[in-house]
Amino acid sequence: MARDRSPKERQRRQLERKQARCAGYDRILIVSEGSKTEPNDFREIRTAHRLHTANVEVRPSELGTAPIQVVQYARELFENGDRHRNIQRRAFEQVYAVFDRDGHASYFDALNQAASLDDKLRNDNRQPVVFRAIASIPNFELWLLLHYKDIQGGHSGADPP
Image (cartoon, rainbow, N blue to C red; front, side, top):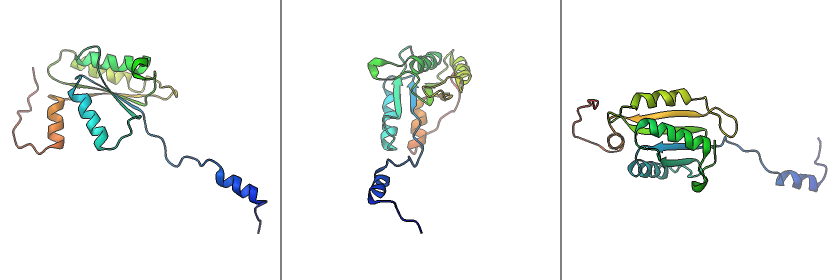
């Protein structure tokens, strides 16, 4: 039976930094069509589910509210960052562009562009990035109501023109 060489050796091993036991969380960027409702709702969801604020960044699109503009801004913010908002370039593992269907002319183009970017961009760790369009039909507010409240009213479910 072998013994430890010395008390100093035992103490050194006890003071060594331990290896991480679980994987780190993905860093997520969410860019929304709306400047108030969606960012506030995502912040409330983040708080309710106790998601660490350092891992989830929620920003409204600054290029406009058309779906293609939301996707373009999400890509631009990911690739270039924003030093005024302390967002580093390529600092996310997942990027989401959130917009309503609302009959936008660029709706399908936005879906296609987001799909073409999925796993094509690389982050600061040179890993492929998940890039997804999250389209709420007909709109984000109704989606939230249906998922978090017991709604008894009817909805036609018809897509807007």
